[in-house]
Image 1 (cartoon, rainbow, N blue to C red):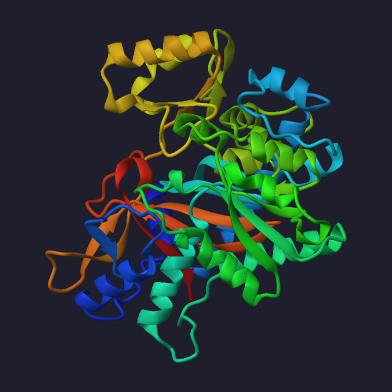
Image 2 (cartoon, rainbow, N blue to C red; image 1 turned 120 degrees about the horizontal axis):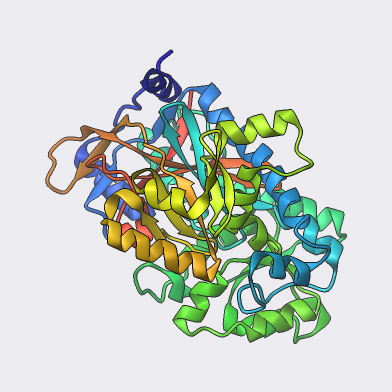
Amino acid sequence: MAATEYARDWFGGHLAPPPASADEIRTVVRHEIRGIGYPYQEFLPAAPFLLPSSSYAELFRATDLLVGLLHRTALEAGPDAAARMAAYGATKRDYPLFIKDHVLEERYAACMVRPDVVIGPDGPKFLEFNISGGFAGVVEGWCRYEAWRVLYGDGDGGLPFRHHDPFAARADFFEDVCQDLDLPRKLAWVGTLLENVTPTTETRYFDVETDYLLSRGFDARYVEVEDADELWDCAPARRYPLGLRHFNVADLERLGVRIDAARRALDNGCLLLATQTSGFLGNKKAMGLLSEGRPWMSAAEHAVVEKYLPWTRILGDRRTTARGREVDLLEHVLAEQEDLVLKRGIGSNGRQVVIGREVDAAAWRAAVEAAAEAEDSVVQRFVPAQTCRLAVVSDAMDVPEVAEVAPVLSPLLFGRRPGGVYARFFANGATGIISVVGHSASDTVAVTR
């Protein structure tokens, strides 16, 4: 089977039919994402992506395998957090929230995962891994699933397709943590409204999930990062020993939000997940190490990495292998500009990314030389994203129209439990950096039959 035929077979060619009129789809989809700080989107999905069951399952299976390998790669970098920071060229400013219990720190590093996957000519390729408690896609994906439940309306509150509920998966995970650590069923969602894409004083982004947790029998509340002292500086019966660390340290620093209160909450026995060690797993340098190969990897593990990771290398003045031969890495990167992407190890929302084919040679050289000097980046083989069909609507459309789009698919895992597939796309089929926050992409979810 030819490469592009393989990709078309992976998508399956199935098209979920629009469930209602364009007006009703616009109304319901926009209603379900109200109050969560979302930007205005000109193009909206008129249906979810409909994947073959084998492809849907492959996303979760491959994610689980790769995260296990990343976990081992991150931990082997050093015997403790200080040694790992040194190995990654990071500082306490990058990773300031480690806890004293090293066993829990390492155990819950990989408990929440959202990779970004494109379908290349020969199948899924994992471009990066968001591993933390603060990535987007959980609430956003749940709101999209809610919209389709309303619009497809099977009468029982479900969809005529199979999918995993992100809120249910995360609640199941926290249920297990409470049982394993003998903790009360009390959960604090710690975050900030300042990270919303558009300014809002509404707390619906957090309320929808804490309301769900209340319905599951948890005592759940939302707390601003700067108010995290409320979790422990109170009577014992009112304390929250467990919660979600729903914030990105670098983003908070950029926004001028202090994390001192969160640090004190950790020091006083509140376990906020995912733990700080998750930062090592999500650092793109871990992908570079794994792609290059580790001494402990089996033949089967090498095969998994070869199949699902694009060629990725930590950028530096050194020699490595590329396309089956040994090369000088910097010379190779400059010569292969059209086929490479430069990414900083710590970054989010498409920031700190330079796509070689989108800049001129002088800009590429300057970016590569600066990154090599800083020793903080990786280079990755560009993956030509393949397309599939999706029904979309805009304010100008009287009826939904079918667009050819190149989606980024993000399977969600919580404690290794599937939590649905969040997806972003450009309605005009554009590829590159596909981000709702940074590049005004549209979004929906994926389902299967």
